[in-house]
Amino acid sequence: MIEIACIGGYNEVGKNMTAVKVDDEVVILDIGLYIPAILGFEEEQNYMSSEELIKIGAIPDDNLIKDWHDNIKSVILGHCHLDHLGGAPYLCEKYNAPIIGTPYTIEVLKRIIKDKGLKSRNKFISIKPGKRFQISKNIKCELINVTHSTLQTVIVVLFTKYGNVIYANDFKLDKSPVLGKETNYERLKDLDNVKVLIMDALYSGTKTKTPSENVAREMLKEILLNDNTKGKAIIVTTFSSHIARLKSIMDFAKKINRKVVLLGRSMGRYFGAADSLNLIEYTKNVELVEYPRQIAKKLKEIEKNGRSKYLIVCTGHQGEPKSVLAKILNKEYSFEFLPEDIVVFSSNIIPNEISIKNRKLMEDKLEGHKVKIFKGIHQSGHLSGEDMIDFIKMIKPEHIIPCQGDKTKLTGLCEIAKEIGYKEGKTVHVLNDGDRLTIK
Image 1 (tube, helix red, strand yellow):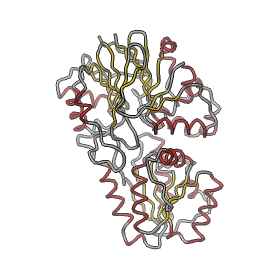
Image 2 (image 1 turned 90 degrees about the vertical axis):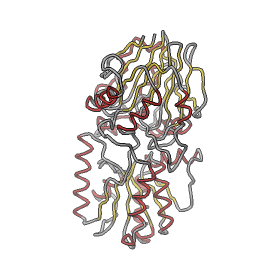
Image 3 (image 1 turned 90 degrees about the horizontal axis):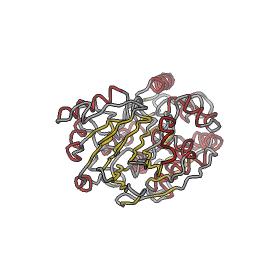
Image 4 (image 1 turned 45 degrees about the vertical axis):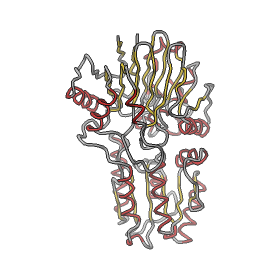
């Protein structure tokens, strides 16, 4: 018998955690962080217990499966974004189980644990996509390469005697990625006897196909290679984990003879991890500066040497109050914006109240300096409605469980599934955090 426990990510965007129980063996899929809940608690976060973090809603409430804890055989992480692995350092110590992921995902996790001064007693296992491996007596697993807005994202397949469980949370169907391998369509098409598909529903309300990352690259090209950038400061802010986006920025900076300076601790985590695994080329034209004192020193140097010689990439795309861009605006760093300087938000705003508010405050301050602001220079890492139809038809699951979103988003995927023959409550299941579903 297969039982699915929805722990996090079924009432909110983030805090993803799902448990799959096959007879008496349990596999945990993702242990994410709910980022809005920790804003304002960043300094205290590392010293809070898992129960305190659960109480403020920052990590999933794994007490929902307390009766399963002794049977957990492994924790499998689909990719390196905080809303999928950010809770692992705080919860995994409870489980006598290894943490499994792709090499990049595991490297990022190790860096987060080290940076925060935390410890883990769990064994880390790096698995390259395409290899089938044994998790326990009755469960085998395979990680299948898929495209997303970070490197080495995978779809997790659990093979059981009752049928196969597919966990496809956070991905897109990009046939021409800027960096990394294309989705392994042939392997996905070969999968049979799919009992359950647990699937990303975030953009179920967008009835289109998600454009390729190459579209975002062309948008950046139009801005960065424009003659109007000459003599101006250029600051780009984007997701630190979006290594393909950083590659595009680096490529165009080279064309306009500007040195790229990456500013921020999270830039160090994600870019440093990619560099250590030789997933991106660290050129002489790129400098990484992670810590506040060094960042302050570098910004003074940029002012002194001439801002037109540099292209700054920094944290702050969601308006985070403690980001590098926010600290520049608040004059914690001595770098002055001048009229006609260029600020590029190479991201969309994460759809939650606090991010929307923070970004609005940041944009208002930037407008006060009369800088040129370019927003939405981005393409999503999530599939949209038409892609969802294509994916479901490719996989042909018996049951579908929408995940990664509030009720509106999960219901949107439910409606899509119903359009192609699935029945709500029977073969497509809209669930909540804390729900369990038995698949017979």
